[in-house]
Image (cartoon, rainbow, N blue to C red; front, side, top):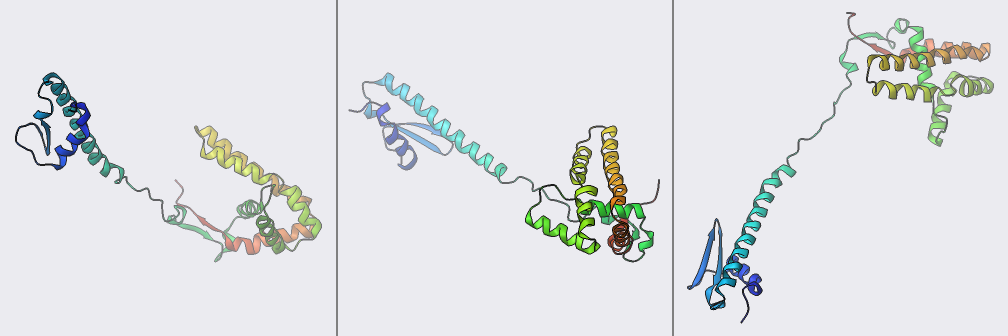
Length: 227
């Protein structure tokens, strides 16, 4: 004859799938009926009582597990979706100057800063970046000597300085930090613009003609009323 603990798997199966039989002790719970056949332990009353307590604890644990799973399921699948803006904040502002219509309204210093930022590449370029930079240089119609001066002198280290200023601005904890980042950016662009004087006279003229002519037509200045 098997002891009560040894028949736990069969009892659990009987409790879930088998109708109750006469002569059983029934422990009733919501939606569960656990049957312990009394004839299995006619002389081991104390063991059966302990076994029924263990069985009761097991059923309660199973019920708690089912309840928690049911409560957690909707939580795991109902997290709010994060969305990103679909348009730039800048384009929601009024247009102060459209270079494609009135290039003369674009200030020269603004045009030069935008030009230098666009020409600034990192030191270690991929093949695609080299091709992109060369395409931009070709528009200027510079000699090879002036192209080399522009890349290796005028623009040397500019991309790294601008990137560092951008990181500082985005992580600024105080107004002073933000002001420092903006000053670093402006100083780097101003220095690069001054270094354009190292090009030949023809090179300077070519760059100036491009910036004030075709390049200004690509610039749009957005803004609002002065407060």
